[in-house]
Length: 131
Image (cartoon, rainbow, N blue to C red):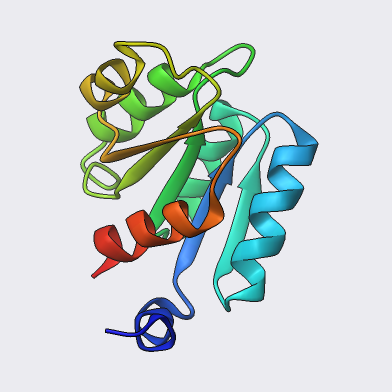
């Protein structure tokens, strides 16, 4: 299947990007908006939970290292809520050490990408989870 066909399948989906680093947020949000996705953004786990209570989200991209409530705790809270437990989460982290991927998946993430983010790899994982 070609990429334009796959992009048509996910166009208009609601994506929540959670990252406390404005540079990462800008890069990811700009890319996702350029391929016709509706993007909501949050700089904290607390705000992400709030957005999920107000908006129907199709997939979440979660930074794992944030102050106050980190990505691990935020994912656990999302998965504990019956209204949000089935939303796929891709953990996005600068930690690429042995065991980090497993730790993200144990917290409830569906997939994992490391920073700096390869946008094509991220897109492939998003398409796989949204189909």
